[in-house]
Amino acid sequence: MLILTRKLGETIRIGNKIRVTILDAKGKHIRVGIDAPTDVAVHREEVYQMIKQQNILAAGYDDSIGKNLSHVWNRMKAPKEEI
Amino acid sequence: MKISTTRFGEISIDESKVIQMKGEMLGFENLKRYALFIQGEKIPFWWFQSVEDGSIAFVVINSLAVKQDYKPVISDAEAKILEIRSPDDVVLLSVVTIRSDPFTVTANLKAPIVVNSKKMLAKQIVLVDSDYPVQYPIGDNSSALQGGKKEEIFPSLLQNFAKL
Image 1 (tube, chains in turn blue, green):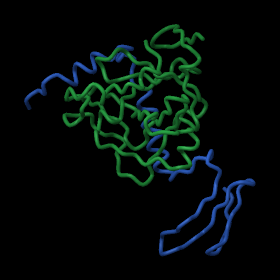
Image 2 (tube, chains in turn blue, cyan):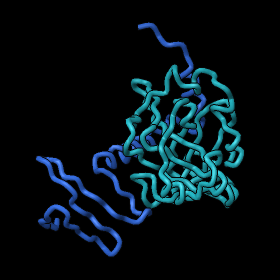
Image 3 (cartoon, rainbow over the protein chains, first blue to last red):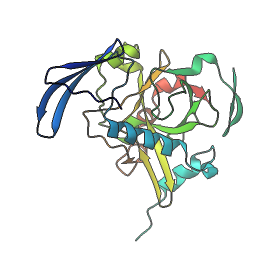
Image 4 (cartoon, rainbow over the protein chains, first blue to last red):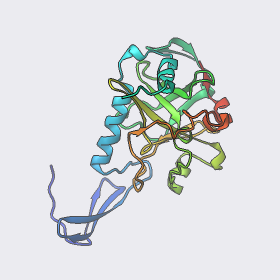
């Protein structure tokens, strides 16, 4: 990992289209401004991982679900079992 | 064109029904072309099938059938990427996760697939500033489950998409 030290207000350039500016620092919180082309997705890492994991989970359910979703639907509509 | 899929075997699909992703389904960066398959109008779930990898298909549902007051904020930049001219052209899809034990069905409201049904462009947009959950249970308050109005669950825009 490349490690750079920057002061408040200073910027890092990544490639020729992405700029990352250190805006503010208070205690453990750093505010970062990012200028990037609209086709570059910028995510908080934990949010990115969460959505990615959910997509993988959703695409990966076992094939017993098959191609016809009516049984899933029927089960959802079934009266709830008393506990 | 013909595509070969794991679930549905070989199917023919008109090129005009293929949806081009602007950006990716997170975790599936290499797949850019999908078809939305509607299976009749009795079940509110549809398939978002990769055209490029026949083994990848997501179950999706109309987000508004899950939560009627769902209002994701789509930025001007993203509307531009998707060439959205009118909100009436937009279909919001939520990726559905089905677990068998215990049986739960949830919809991802945090990252809807926003589809411009006129231009057949789509993007999974992460709603950064919202509290919408990634695993929202499809439950008794969902119009999909409450026999809500047909139009709420199956918007007429669906006619633009492929049928199985």
